[in-house]
Length: 404
Image 1: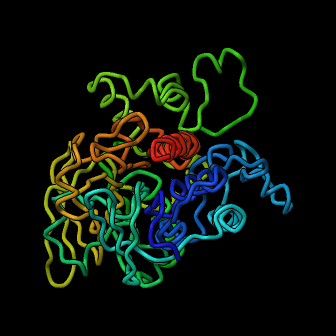
Image 2: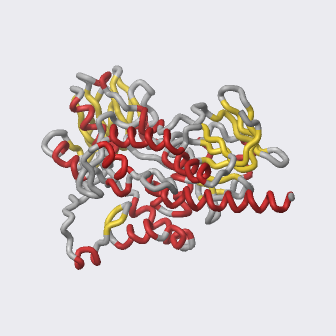
Image 3: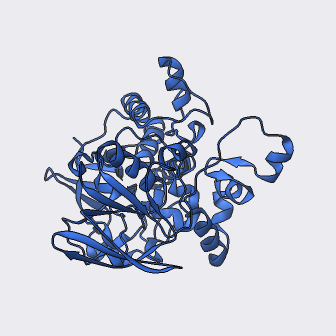
């Protein structure tokens, strides 16, 4: 194994694997570390269906035939760009096939420390190996960024968890569970809990749950002009964010914040409506304002337009999403962390994903604050991976030319 490499990629989810595929195709000396697709393999509700449409569920490679459509066609799996939902099992099988074909050298070990020396980065692995790298890309996904509202913090770990912790929910059979949230994570998990025999209720601030529109495939030109489809949603705002992330990058901060906020509203896949409505009790229009443990159970006080009410359950699951925060990356050396300029709690990156520390890059959710909501979704890897790989190729070639 090499002790020095040009590029070290930390993270083996959609962004890390896609970047590695492009680096490998360019012949760049790289190493990639992480548990492949770990969030999807170990932290998504089993038997779930992806919210993203087929055409927005690809990993990125410069090779032909690398999309999930090609994978399904070869194996006789029913596929449509928009009208047939993709199961988690199919997506994971596709990701495994993609990895076997394009990145067979993923090192399934975690990074325990990342520091910066005089000229090189030092990457320490859980195996004890130390690797020197001229460039490092943090493609950490959502692994460290699960967010739970402060109001739920008084509950002990036995009574409170985040949706990220639950792939299997069999231990909740026969239990009363409150799922706090109204997005796809909350709805998918509530559905899984119900099927497992738990007594579930969804607690949401919104007055009603939102579901994506059913794709009909027969829209007129007028419909398209009014609300054009994109990989992250319908409408001109979504279309702009999906198709022009470099223009988004150059927007004033206030416009960026407004655009990101408009795409952070929770909504589930259209196919989940029938699994929820009339089947799972909904406590919408209610905001948790207090949480406490009492007699081994969780007691939530909820506020609504009608006043306050209290519910008592065996467990509370916060399906409240993810918020990037550099300080939550356990492998980031404090001295290196202190050198990274911030945009809020995210790294301030250039339009080529480079942080204020030369040679250190961040992509995926960590870069959403700069490039917009496209980077919140897996489809953002199709923009980020080829752009970052091309930049690294140019940088390495330029460095080698100077050295020569």
